[in-house]
Length: 150
Image 1 (cartoon, rainbow, N blue to C red):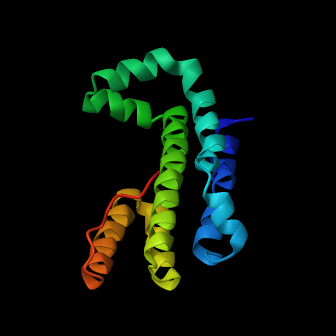
Image 2: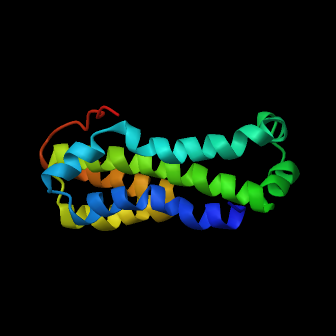
């Protein structure tokens, strides 16, 4: 399978879970499926499969990062694919936490759908937005937002 095909198909590893969280948040199977941290495993395994053959070069670039070396790594088809799969795996893991935490706190599913979309598309921005929303919900109910389990 070519890097272009891997890149194009990699989203299929995570998309079903995002659909469940955003569009079927109250379905009994959604909480059961999303409750497992293993949902990120397929993307993590793909990432490992892409990284391990190039571990020396990648380790060298990331262990003492310099802009030029990172730009060169990410500027290649292999580097871009590896980075994309990294984003997919970690954004899903964060999205899973956001979903579970929001359900536990009773945050409106209608409000969470766009937040989850932002976590998927712009990871840290969606996460920061959720933390702000979480703090507002805690203020509204006079609670301190305790951390949720991963």
